[in-house]
Image (cartoon, rainbow, N blue to C red; front, side, top):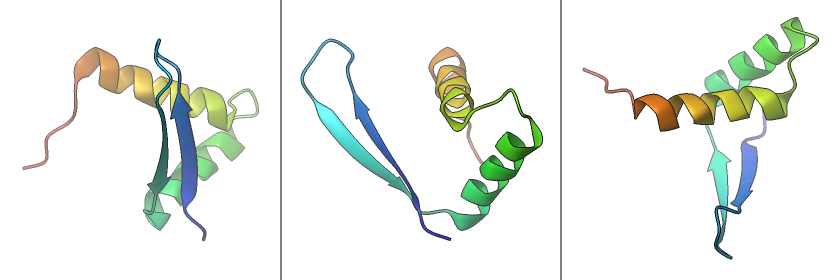
Length: 62
């Protein structure tokens, strides 16, 4: 499976970043969730995930 590539821009400045998510298992699971929920788009799933990190901070493993 190819990596998921995201381009982030906005936030009040002219900065643009391209991020490549190279975790095949995570990308596959994300696509399965989106496919299983007809009302959920990939855009909305990513927005919800980003909102979760913004609201709650990063998760820690350990």
